[in-house]
Image (cartoon, rainbow, N blue to C red; front, side, top):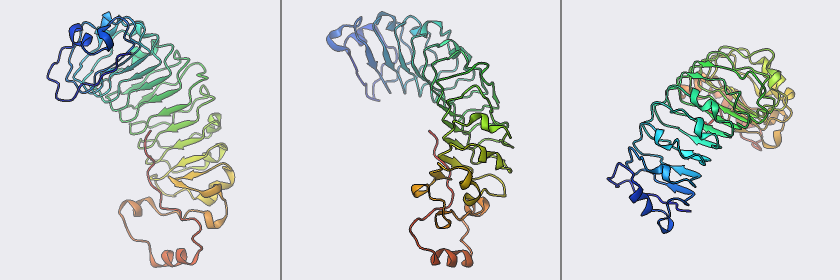
Length: 316
């Protein structure tokens, strides 16, 4: 029921029951199912436990350093505490009804407490200070994990099969080893761009369900293992060392490929006219001009499809 946004100029920092009752519909705190108080300068609130029917809560963009005060709100299914100042997660045993947890843009270094959230479907923890991605096998309903822009250098792989996991985002971290696992048989999106990965595993085909793989801006030289991922539709390898992977070399092995290095391939065509001219990453990054011979050759070809130089894929 009650859904309210307080403007950024709100001066109060402690959220009291009296203030909440003045916000929710008919002042009925006990039956309100939804509450949104964003960018309100809130630093604490000890009275939210009275909202026994609360299912969705957003306190994004405030000044919270912890959220122990929410441990009595057992019915919460959606919790958004992004853009706060949270450094440490509380004991989350009472949050087992959560299906979506958004803690992006905080100062969290340890994500371990989330491993008890058995009903969680979406976990968002990007832009924190996490160093270790913990084993999330207990989260049997998890579908999406977003952990980009952290300090992760260690990924603890699941010990048992996670049948519902569809998307993992680990871009912009410090990962050196490709997180290969056969415990995510339905994984469709894996984003690992802007890490420090040195090699692709030869048995990468155990993740054959992948439709999107982004390994751009790493330190990978041998791209041959990618030819085993026959279901790929979207692939980014731009920004790795020479030799660059050429579209005409990999396309015969990836019949469903539609996007290569952020460039759309119309109809997924495999003809030479549709093949991307591969430009050295170093040349692109330094914004050098194409040599005259290459420019002349490009002008001679029909311009049914224009494939741009590789660009870095956006994070999601």
